[in-house]
Structure formats: structure tokens, C-alpha cells
Amino acid sequence: MSLLTIRNLTVRFATSTGSFTAVDGIDVHVDAREVLAIVGESGSGKSVSMLAVMGLLPDTATVTADEMTFDGRDMLAMSASERRRLIGREITMIFQEPIASLNPSYTAGFQIEEVLRLNAGLSSREAKKRALELFQAVGIPEPERRLASYPHQMSGGQCQRVMIAMAIATNPRLLIADEPTTALDVTIQKQILDLLMTLQEEHGMALILITHDMGVVAETADRVVVQYKGKRMEEADVLSLFEAPKHPYTKALLSALPENAVDGKLPTVSDFLIEELPQ
Amino acid sequence: MTHVVEGQALTQDYVISAGMFGKPKLLRAVKGANFAVEQGKTLAIVGESGSGKSTLARIIALIDPATGGTLKIDGQPVAIGRGRVPRELRSKVQMVFQNPYGSLNPRQKIGDVLMEPLMLNTDMPASERHDRAEAMLKRVGLGPEHFNRYPHMFSGGQRQRIAIARAIMLNPRLLVLDEPVSALDLSVQAQVLNLLGELQEEFGLTYVFISHDLSVVRFLADEVMVMNKGDVVEQGSREALFADPQHPYTRQLFAATPVTDIEAIRARVARRQAMRLATSAP
Ligand SMILES: Nc1ncnc2c1ncn2[C@@H]1O[C@H](COP(=O)(O)OP(=O)(O)OP(=O)(O)O)[C@@H](O)[C@H]1O
Ligand SMILES: Nc1ncnc2c1ncn2[C@@H]1O[C@H](COP(=O)(O)OP(=O)(O)OP(=O)(O)O)[C@@H](O)[C@H]1O
Ligand SMILES: [Mg+2]
Ligand SMILES: [Mg+2]
Image (cartoon, rainbow over all chains, first blue to last red; front, side, top):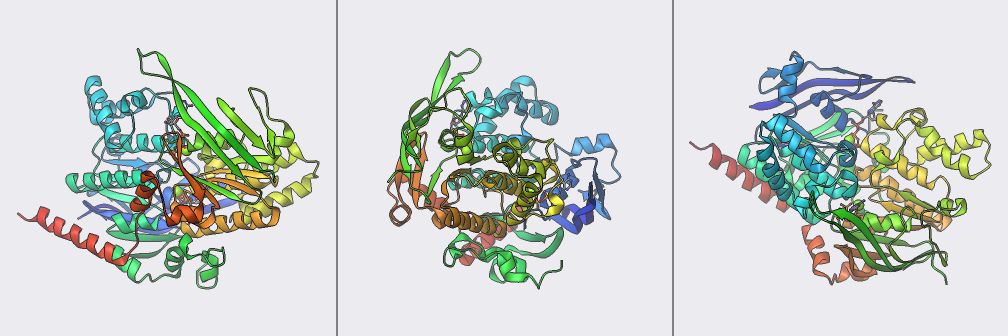
């Protein structure tokens, strides 16, 4: 059964040059125990559509949808307090820019313990203990010391892992991970993906994974949605997508791997499909 | 021949406190790095998260003074100490930070972000500054409609491109790039990497490029340096490193790189289906 269903989601921003449509009528659905990967061009509305689900867009955004339900509950008709119980507990998100999403004025430990107390209902003592376990789980070296560190005292990848630990702290039913491993080298990336897949398998968590890394898609996804200029271009199970990509943009994505360079130049999308794509 | 940038035994210490009751202690984040990069070449730095790559990058880009060792730009030792970096040196050396959001002023429109270096460092008339900034937006795949928008109005990958655009506005001699394409989808990544290649060819730009993506490193590096826990554990030409990685960590990196091989995907999908059946069985 579908855990999250979104139909015809549109997000418009008011800008100084008029209204701008960032997300143009997309559908998303994800089942419990399913890993959905969203790939697509930079600026194609991947983050904005998920921030719309989380209710975290600025006031300049207008969000409309024909349907937005989580586990049969209508998210569009929900009261603010109902929504607060859902977001941050049952649905959590790893944000794309980890350093910018941590509060610079508090230690990493304080921030994760707060999540554990407020959203997972733990006592201060339990929260301390659990925070340490979570830091260990995401592979933060010297976790005790890191709990007492401020974000600026940590490397990019360390901040990213703090964010991941915070997002999985409540054992969510749906985790939205926006480029969760961009700051991590492949060995740690593997550890994190293994961790997410274990949570996913053991707790039946659903995972929406936004990524530009086709290797990550190949190694984790069940189903893949390809987005381009605010629209959905293609949706397929992971095997079909790699075996027989249908849309020209998908083909372009798969062939822009740096190993496919010709004479020191990489193929770009425009080499592929200028005339083939709707403008 | 002199090198554009050269480091000798560079070290960096951070003062950290060991929790509530511990005495403050020092963390040596970079433990003696040696390197030299010729004009028009690219040195790539790879390594585990937390191994000191950004710390070293900030030293090379004259953002932070090193605790020890010598840094030379165009053969001249530089000691930035606590003082400000002289204007001439600043326009020569630019950096693209790992966290583009943090490095952009939230109240400054993107057009102004790009025009500011020209205003501070050249006598260019306003109309020309404007044209240059618009042209640069185009080269990184953005458009004139973005000129008057603020940083928060952009996607992660767009901000990353703005940071790159800002750093190359002044035609620097040395550009230090810290994970500059990590948030870009492959097609935009290709566009940015091609742009960096063109600039290198056109102006003989020298790059120090940090990336955790080995395929990117293979595409653009001349020399590669591998860091692990503050130490440089392996260093050499791209060819040598990719043909025959010596250090166990380097080998681990190669082994962990995800594969897009169809048979591997098929096997994984089958494994997951079997597992599903097993868990849903009564
Ligand atoms: N507050 C805002 N005001 C105006 N436009 C915005 C705002 N936030 C985002 N946008 C625009 O919406 C579009 C979609 O942005 P989004 O962040 O969803 O892209 P994305 O697919 O996540 O890209 P990336 O891969 O680069 O992160 C972009 O063109 C962006 O410039
Ligand atoms: N201001 C600081 N104070 C104390 N420790 C710091 C500070 N900045 C960085 N560190 C520590 O120094 C080490 C090296 O950090 P650095 O940011 O250079 O790593 P990195 O190789 O760039 O990692 P990543 O790939 O995750 O970005 C890390 O252990 C980090 O926690
Ligand atoms: Mg995004
Ligand atoms: Mg770093």
C-alpha cells in the first residue's frame, strides 16, 4: 500500500520578475519498505517538491496539489498540530546542505538530544545515551568528543553525518534524504547507505532518496523517477532504467559519466537533446 | 621553473576541548604536507572525510595561516599571519568553499555577488561589470533572470555554480576548489568540468581540486594526493595512482566505488525480492 501519495503537485514562487513555477504538476508515491530514487537536473525541483511535503517552504511559495496523503491521512486538510506530530517524527528529512541546516550556536550533541527529547520522547539521560549510539552508527570518529563540538569545528562530511543521525533518531516511517552522501568519500558513503538500507529493511522504513549519483541509484533504489525542468520525464524500476532508459534526458544522464569523456570533453545534455525536449 | 603554488611541511593545529571537564588539547588536522603545482596543472586531493582536505585547502587559498611550514605562491613565501591578504595576492588566489550557502551573503543579490570582485579589484565601468556578470551566469548554466535573486532562492547545485562563477570572475592564477561539483547532476557537472577545462586552456589556470569522486579526479587531475587522518599517504601522477594504487586506503577507495553494472543491479533486485517474500510470508 502506498505510504505517501502526491498527485499533481505544483509549487510557484513569487519573484521580482513574476511568478516562477519550480514544480509543475508532479506525482510521487512511495510504499512502505520501498526505496524511491529521484534523479534529475540541477534546479529541476527535487528539493522544493520534498520541502513542500515537509511544509518547509518560505512564504513566497504557493503549493497546490490534488492529493497529498500519508498513510491514508490527508496532509492538506491537517491541522497545524497534527502536522507537527507527523513531520519530524514519522516523516523526517536529511537536508541537502548539512552545514547550513545545523544551528551554529549549539553543539551537535545538544541539537540531537533535543530531537530525541522532543520528538522521540526520551528523558535527558536516555537522549544522551541514544545520541552517542547514533553517532557511532553513522561512523562519526571519537563520538564523545564530537557531541561536544560545534558545527564549525567539524568537517563537511562530519556535519552531514550529524544530520543523518538526527534524521534517523526517531525511527521515522518515511525518510526523505536529499543528496545525503555528497560530502562523503565512497567508503563512508557505503557505510551510510548500508545503514539506511538496514533501517529500511528492519523497520520497514520507506526511503525517498534524491541523488545525482547514478552509482548510488544502482546500488539502492527499487524505483526511479527522473525529473527535468519541474516535470517528471520518466519513471521505471531500477533495472529497466539502466537497461533501457527511455527518455533522452535519462540517456544523457547515464552517458555524462566522466569516464565517457571524448578528447578531454564530457558530453552534456545539450549535446543530446536540444530539439527533443519540451521547453 | 617556478611553481604557482608550493607547500613545504605544512601543518595545521586546532585547539579543541575534550568535553566538559577535559583540558583543552590540540588536534593536528594536517601533519606536514609537501607539494608543488606547475602553472596550468591540476592537483587533486582525495581522502576520507575528516582527513584534513578542507583544512589544507584553506591554507593554500590564504584563508587560514598554517601552524607550521612554508607556503609559496609564484615562488614567494607568503606569511598571512593575522593581517589581511594584500589585494594583489587576493585576486591571484581564489577559493570555492565546500559549503556554498555559508560563503554567500544572504542579503546580496547574485548579480551583485558576481560584480563585487570586479568593483573592489578593477576600475571597470558599471555597464561592463554587468555584462561580464551576465555572461558568467550563462557560462555556468544560469540565466539573466537569476541576476536579481537572493542566494536562498536557488537550488543546491545552482548555489554551487554561483560560488564557482564568483571565484573565476577575476581570472585568478590559482583556484582552490573544495568539492565544487558534489551536488551537481552529471549533465551540469559535465558542463562545469568542461568550463574549468576551457579556462585552464585559455588562461593557464592552476587548480587545487578536492573531490571524493574518483571518476572526476581521473578526468581532470594531473597529480593526485591522498590524505588519511591528516597525513599525506600517497602522492603521484594520476596515471601512476590509478594504474597501481599503493596505500591500503587508496585501494579501499577504489573498491568502494559504486557500480552501475546491469548484472549487479539484477542480482541486488533479486535479493531484495527474495527478502520481501520471506518477511511477508505468514
Ligand atoms: N525561494 C525561492 N524563490 C524562487 N525560486 C526558488 C526558490 N527556491 C528554489 N527556487 C527555484 O526552484 C527551482 C527548483 O529548485 P530545487 O532546489 O528544487 O532544485 P533541485 O532539483 O533540488 O536542484 P539541485 O540538484 O541543484 O539541488 C530552481 O530553479 C530554483 O532556482
Ligand atoms: N575549527 C575547527 N576546530 C576544531 N577542529 C576542527 C576545525 N575545523 C576542522 N576540524 C577538525 O579537523 C579535521 C579535519 O577537518 P577538515 O574539514 O579539513 O576535513 P576534510 O578532509 O575536509 O573532511 P570532509 O571530506 O568531511 O569535508 C576534522 O577532524 C575536523 O573535525
Ligand atoms: Mg536540491
Ligand atoms: Mg572538507
